[in-house]
Length: 228
Image (cartoon, rainbow, N blue to C red):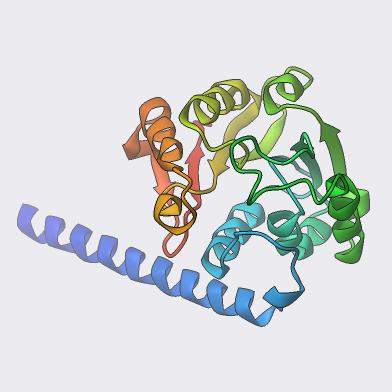
């Protein structure tokens, strides 16, 4: 009997994984069909968009989210339909000066980065839903009350020390049962563009623990759900 229960449990777990994989493939196809060429410049793949959409869809109607490091707005614009449908308040946090050590990639658009970002928000019909916070992620974190956000997405400075600091600063800002998440958990940037982003995975694993972190299939998006 015990063996039968274990086998049944194993079969159910496999079926759940297969269903999740099929759901993610469907979301990737939807992201491709949504017109990726129209999105702002950036490094958010169809798989990343599918994963981010799933995270955003899990937030409550009229909830609050924050994205740390928005650049030109590709990731936020990729979930514009969810933002409008669920009437979300999105806090966009960035210095709008590019990213230190990566200015060859994440530049400031010749001093026009914030203008470009806000223009993209308007183009995707979400300007009224997004509150822009100009400054460092750590200084802006101090302005938020603890347990005030349903979702926080970290995609700012990718160096280990900064990612670790962002996790520690923003984790308390997430509501019980909310999500702390981020980007570039397993992307081989070092080999593609000469930038080492292995610090993201190291910081996430050390502070949150591998067992509690979910990395969405076919993407580099990670998430950690707080206890209720």
